[in-house]
Length: 114
Image (cartoon, rainbow, N blue to C red):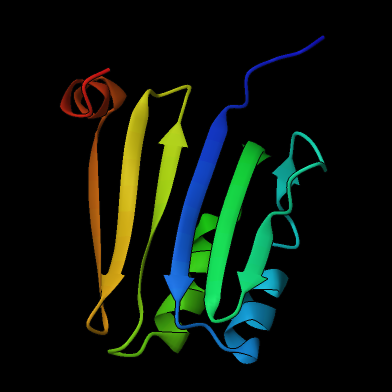
């Protein structure tokens, strides 16, 4: 039986050093993805990419790690798509600050022209 994931999370953060990447790996250890074919975290130079589809993701732990390591030069975002509640929550990181915005996925799809 193939089912749609309840939660989809995508994001990136840069510049990320080895300590930040290791802390993110530890924070993501309890995630429950639907499949093992796509790595949860990838590091490409000083860029960290996050890609998750599944039923449980330790978002609060990941955000705590980002906030603990956040510097003015960091830039990035984490998008959380809650398919059950049909909402998008976007966490952005820039200039040493975090911001969180939320909206209906219908609004996002209309804005993007879908």
